[in-house]
Image 1 (cartoon, rainbow, N blue to C red):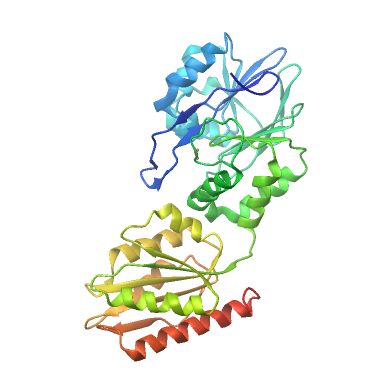
Image 2 (cartoon, rainbow, N blue to C red):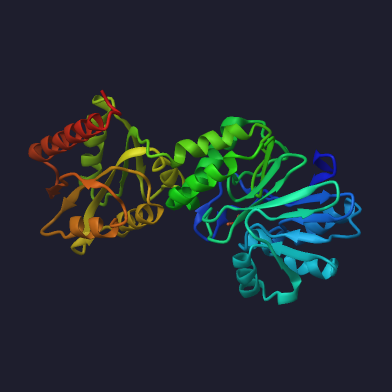
Length: 393
Ligand code: FEO
């Protein structure tokens, strides 16, 4: 049994094989759906369940722990990777009540068609006694759905934070061992689904500031015994600080855009600007999303196809627009044969970004000296903009 503290057990499931989430997000290292069993002197609570594909693992773990009674199932979040086994758990432990926020209750009724009388709705800050252990519910909305809460086990000082602070990482270690690996996975997860909600996450961070936390037990990835490791990382990610970095995401059909990208990237490197270059035809979009957490500038490179941007470039623009990174500057480079509306199209697709658009560089056909000079000028402009906000010298 995986015991975090006396009578606090991890009973969730590791999904070593999962490689895609929401049919969108790559999971190179698998994931886990964590659930925690808390045995109080009077009542027993299960915090979250697991993805419906792993219900049998959760049930086996509960049986192995000798769990003959569950009084409460705490649902921190309605998404099915945590709630999907609720119907089976309620069938197995019919006396159990689902404890959750009113918003989450409504969503669980919609998503899982649970009965109204299965629930106990709790307010922000409300406590629930298990006897010698007390749970406090703290609303932490928009990490990444509006209904999400965290549960704080007061006596043991453990914060069960659900997706918040989680990492998509399948590992046999209950606790964080390889800090760099976990931070990388947590940053990828933050970038993929939480980055658009930087502002509410800042509020949530302030909210948990007043808690004495000795352990953070998220619902994906290992448990943090050093909470400051992930809390400090989140503080940095949600801050307004950007780095002297340029993300260049491009696609090329007949080498013109690729040659422009290569020249441009060299020009940035010569100016001591860090570059992350992504060929969109082979890019893991999680890597691209992660690079946008810190970069001051994004540049999209595309040839013109049927008068507009290449669909792969349009996809990158739509993705960046949805993720709303704190990026300050953007530009577009690329090529066209006889006419192009891709600049208007791509800037239109990135309307959510609060960026200053720097003058794009488009080459007619194969780039010539004037085009390379324009790319050098764009690199100069980026350097001067980065200097202007104090991140380059
Ligand atoms: Fe891990 Fe939003 O579910």
